[in-house]
Length: 160
Image (cartoon, rainbow, N blue to C red):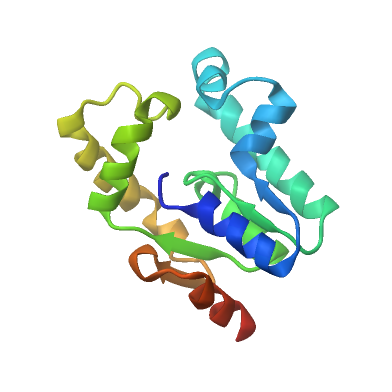
């Protein structure tokens, strides 16, 4: 959440001339509801199931593409295994301080953090990262976001 996945995903898809999918946007389009509304009306479990369905559909219906998944996507329903079978997975590792700064600006559109106060946000991010890190570490590559550039992503993918 807030790591820059959509930004870098769009740049990569443009560079390679292949489709780009933002998993959250695809869910919003199919459900005809904002993520925050899905969370509040149907709950996180419903959202995670829809996330799994949409991930599987996109990877089944497309071959060469870039997809930006939500931060929780790899952590549920063995999605990380599916992701790795379907392509190459990059963990965009972003510092907690940078995440906090970005998420403070986006809090209203993020259901998991919308009710968290400024003082608690850093602790929440730290806790979530701790819970999810074992999934993120299964990625094929890790890119430190502070050093990320289009060139660095291209070099990683070129050496595949």
